Length: 392
Ligand code: GLA
Image 1 (cartoon, rainbow, N blue to C red):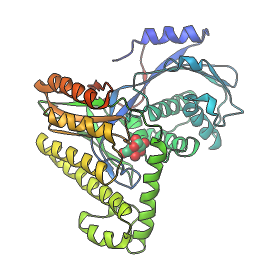
Image 2 (cartoon, rainbow, N blue to C red):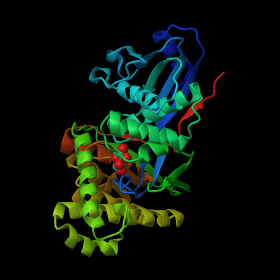
Image 3 (tube, helix red, strand yellow):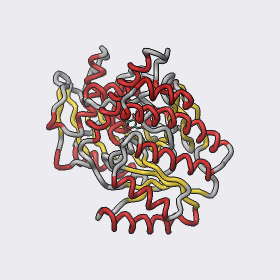
Image 4 (tube, rainbow, N blue to C red):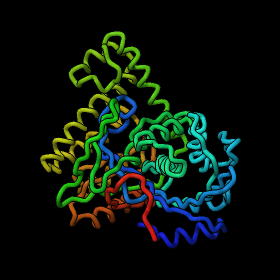
């Protein structure tokens, strides 16, 4: 799945006929193993950076213009942006994520003395829950940091990217995606404490098992608004709970607080949202123990329980994801669940190595029969975070 660097450079040259030096960068996507929808509640999450992501070829310009081109959106052509007008424009489509980074940098008082040409090509399916937008944001943050010597840490880049998503793009996401894409470590997942931004690398594979990413290929347009609705339900619940509990984040609560919380909240929907949050936090802790003990069956059971909670209490799955996960379970996966925001997008399944092909075939057929859509499957490796690709 890795792109050939010479091909990328040639593609850049076809679009930008400049003769300046240019550099190639790779920014991964991410998969979250467990700890879903709790990164905006101060929870523990367990994502990994993956070997599908976004490539960027960059050449400096001598003026204050930014020319952006995406091989994934050729119809949108070359998007030309002036440093003096970095405001969001609907017609700039995908390029708003890149523009937003420049906008935020300027807002923060950073000096951007010249522009650049950027050729982007991603092999992450868009809107699939594997963080194609965060991958692009962190890519552009990293490029700007290098070009303009901004001295940002990788975590600074993640926070900058999250602020673009939250403010400029209006998606009130947590920090998980940007943080793992900036800080990923090859062959590891990172246990992230989203209340402190502390990260602990952990081996994240089970001997004899493969993690399959399964794409529903179903895209719901309301993902962002539904996502924001969940964020706001959690903050509503937090405000009520804070009248009786001295907490900053919902994830400070424990499962044995649940009965008291139910009485406090009164509203059954808010209660179910909080129940997911608290139980998911506990499942993430249990999953870490299962990982340490190399207990794939227990880890799989926790994946199943996570999916059930996201389906019943948090209500972010839907027919397509539920069908895919059920198909994987019926085909013999030891555990399966949605990954990412949900409402469509991808799920993961943990499967014995010698059953991978059979499980894929069976899931393909079961899902197609039920939904009329062909699913896609990816087997990835865990990679480092965003980086410049060394080349001659
Ligand atoms: C999206 C958001 C993340 C996180 C996940 C759900 O990917 O960008 O911050 O909330 O959904 O876990």
